Image 1: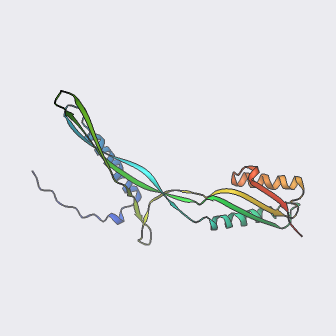
Image 2: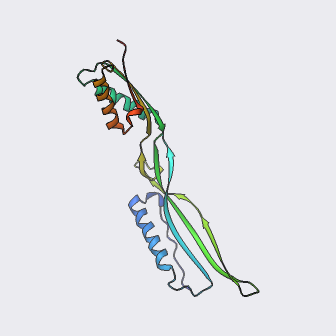
Image 3: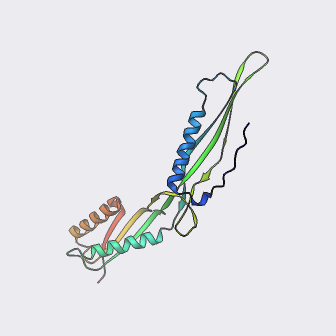
Length: 192
C-alpha cells in the first residue's frame, strides 16, 4: 500500500462550473466502478441523483409590482381613464435549488436451510443542498430556477370598464399578460 497525501481544498471558493464538473466526474467514476458481471453474492453500488428542493419567496411585492404595471398599461389605452387593479395569488413564488441525493445500494443473496435463495437489498440515502459563494463572500444555495407566483384572479376597476367592448379588451390584455382564464378576470366600471 502506498501512502496518500492529504489535499487542503477551499470548498467555498469553487464555482458552480467546477461543482458541475466534480459531479459529472463522480457520476462517471461510479458508473465505471459498477461490475460488468454479477458473480459475487454481495454487490455494492453508489449513485448520485440530482433533485430539487424548493424555498418559498414572498408574493406580495410581486402582486403589487404587476398591479402597477397593468394599471400603467391600461391607462394608456384609448377610451379608458383611471384604473385600479387587484391581483390575488394562488401560491407564492419559489426558488428551486440544486440538491444532491447520493445513495448507497447493497444487494446480497441469502440461502435458507432448505435450499431457497432470497435477495436482500439495502438502500441508504442522504440529501445535501449544493451551495455557492456570491460576490460578497456569502455562502448561498445554488438556485437553478425561479418560479413566479401563480395568479388566482384579477379584479380591474376602470373608467370606461362598463362598456362591453372596452371590458373585453381589458380582459384580453390581462389574459394575455398573465395566462389567466377569462372567468378569473373581472372588469367593472369605476366610480367617477
